[in-house]
Image (cartoon, rainbow, N blue to C red):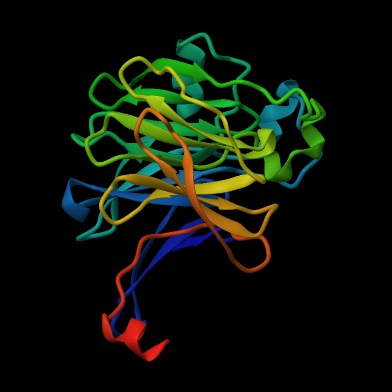
Length: 257
């Protein structure tokens, strides 16, 4: 788990709750993603998101933001990726290097990740160590361009991929939509109206993207096919945000738990 004010990640034994390891990260560690069957853990740090210095010229004030990769057997850091350097090399100097949600291709050769203030996502080649593509998604004309009004420096926040790696699902948080994107062409499908979607994951059989609609207190499912339609939506508590797939005993359903 990320200790956002401690600049570190702590590892707990799920059976005992005891801490078994930790490692240092950049400022405000955020998302954690495992690769290679759990052998490695990638931590993305987002830096300071509560300050008013949101102009691109003040991006340097947001802190130390980077990817920290560790060996989950020893919790030793095996690689640090400063995305600022990769953005600048790709001619993207005005982009923030605050790393938001990320998802890997099935062969784990390319992560797709979001950054602060940007309506879209980027593709990074792990072996070549460079940003290979940038996808800009539509802006909602009703969304203010005053960056200080966007929640925690977000613009788009939430991304997932179907198991085959053919399609991405993107939560256009401040633009109030979600959409399915063809990973080969990066062409987006219909923009599905959603109330400030703040996370995206995949259902059990990989057929649907599941998003949290934080403004509407709902969790909804979107078909991963080319139709990209919202097929189900159920009410949840106040401001649902991060969602994960889980498994519970079959008896729970029968008992009403």
